Length: 104
Image (cartoon, rainbow, N blue to C red; front, side, top):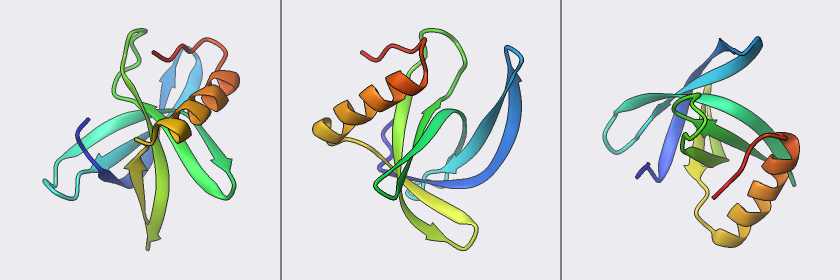
């Protein structure tokens, strides 16, 4: 995903293996392109909200960690976490929250 900032427009629920998962529709502000992602987990650290998202629910799917940077009216603006120190720490947190997930 080459998007630096993406905007959450809405949340819905999808069912996966008997569990309800939130989905978010993200809009790339540069292109206006919308994509839907599944929210695997969310957490708040130091007052900052983070989402672990994926495009598909397949086992070998790519996941992204997003950081909330701003709220505008009903929209929330997230940024893909790219700082390696922050990313490593968040991968550990999400690994503890979701037992059967592995990051590479």
